[in-house]
Length: 128
Ligand code: HEM
Image 1: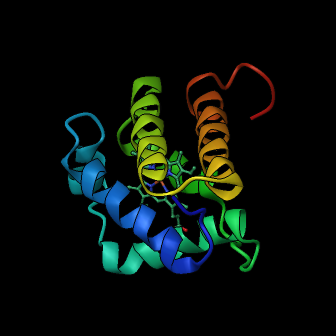
Image 2: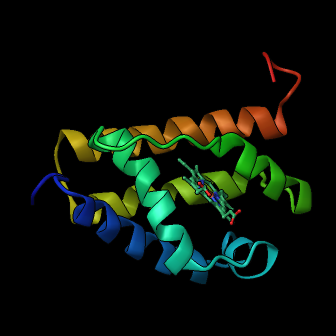
Image 3: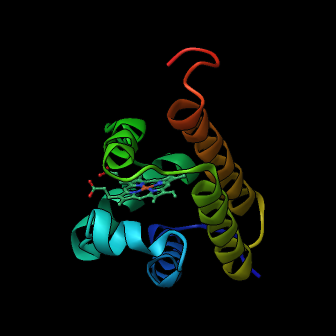
């Protein structure tokens, strides 16, 4: 199995991940009902974020935490939602790729989800 090397590799992960996420009983409704996600528009933005993390070849300037705080204000993103997100995401990466960049992508998914959980669900711990 190869490691992640190109933008196309990142898009392959995201396409598979969102196909599963949309159909998931736990987190699917966020994408289909809470903030109906038009993947044609959003996938390039989400790929920009991951390209900047994994390949360092693009600058993603938006604030991911703020995007999700706004979703959380409409429908709470609970700890179990974030756990499910991470489980699906890391399983998708592992199914397709193997190597240091694949590990980095999974590690960053876990750390962003952990930070998101702290900020959204435990704002009294640490800084907001
Ligand atoms: C249960 C957990 C999550 C849910 C339900 C969720 C849901 C969403 C939704 C509905 C959007 C579209 C927002 C919009 O159209 O305004 C979005 C955007 C995005 N999400 Fe998540 N998300 C979750 C976790 C995460 C995590 C852990 C990460 C990163 C590790 C992440 C990365 C992104 C990025 C990069 C975008 C694009 C933001 C932009 O517009 O630039 N998400 N998410």
